[in-house]
Image (cartoon, rainbow, N blue to C red; front, side):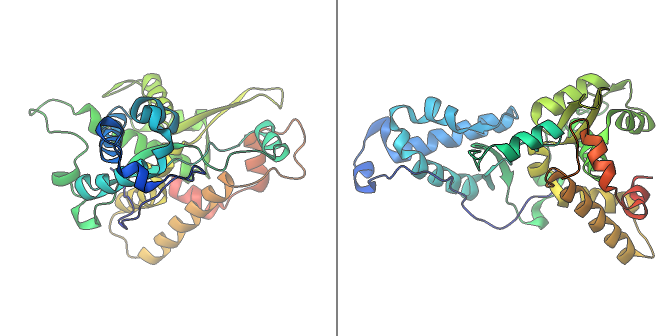
Length: 302
């Protein structure tokens, strides 16, 4: 798996509901704070196994029931147990990027957007020295000669995220297809056809397929999805690029190019609607208007 933050920190979601802790401690049975937090731990682990985001609405319905006012305390205690026992913590997913002209105009026009997604995933907090296959291998080993589908999937979505990032934060469908063809993954992969693999990545939130026909011609691009940003992120892409470069006589220059490439992708994904973007401007065209340094991102891509 890609790198994660090693600092232990409880992230408690914002909640306006005040809770009387003395009253909550007096609660018994399934409504006790201890039982609710244990139920939330089990639910979080089951969601992560299925690569489903942990939704606040589902927590309220499936775990808390009539005790939704204890959400803040149950979440905090469950996160503490996940960190202490399992070496993981619940991290909130970022909101989906606005990339098309229509999406960005809608975001600018809306003054009542929620600042949080109310979706979480589990992220390891193990120190770097313990992040080795023997400890956090993505799946159990198989008999010799059998293909580990889980390992293959991790490698494929990590590579797809890296390719999109290297391309400046958005990658045209045709360019991603060519990259997969060069890896002999254009027709089939260890987990199915290319289309099935990409569909799985989209469903799991690693990448997002963006359609835009505002220019009169439908254009399809890929961007990094919310789970991809949390699970792989800048550090994961940087480590993959360093590993592929291997030993180099000019490591400082390679490192500078890596950081510039990551900064370009991050600036693109966090950009606002350009003031000169007309109604017919597509997401891809907006990205091309700004341009990106050929001597950094494209050299890494090549």
